[in-house]
Amino acid sequence: MTSSTEAVTRDWEGLTIPTAGTYLLDAAHKRVGFVARHMMVSKVRGEFAEAAATITVGDDPMQSSVTATIQAASINTAQADRDAHLRSPEFLDVEQFPTLEFRSTAVKSRDGNEFVLSGELTIKGVTRPVDLEVEFEGVGRSPFGQDIFGFSASTEIDREDFGLTWNVALETGGVLVGRKVKIEIEGEAVRQA
Image (cartoon, rainbow, N blue to C red; front, side, top):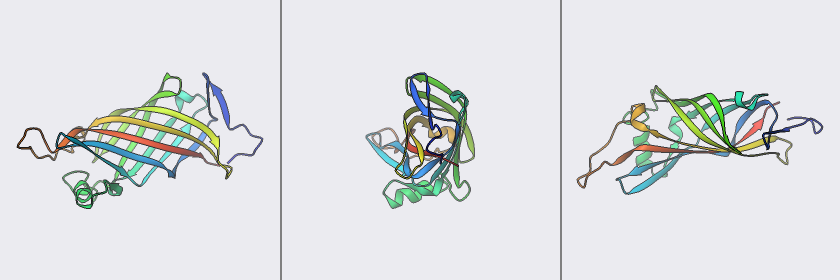
């Protein structure tokens, strides 16, 4: 937290953004979700309940960085049998690969409050480049005196690029589980002392 007289925001290209510093993802105000096709006709939504991230906001906002760790076993699609299968070696293999990791490599301004956060995503020991479409949602101070900012981010990955290749062919054509997975993230980050 900062003192009440210390500036916690600044203007940058028409946006009010947080001052430079280290911020942590607020565990109580985050969602790390995903959407995948099921049987070629519907979508299954789920999330990872346990995730942590450190966001370092740079003096130059384009030099900011993010590192994140997601606990693979915290996957939840609201269906116990499916969740157990997703934790198994046929999918995430949480015993051997307990975390999914993200490390940013670049930030680019797109338009207004929209940015592209490039980085490396590691799932099941396989690292691939990804671009997250990020929307900066705003900055403020909580009633508890914490300086925070909000954001949302999304991307789409091909799960087979990460070795998640399990599937079943359907009699009607197509497969049980789609290759493309949309990742959807919502969060608040809290300034550290």
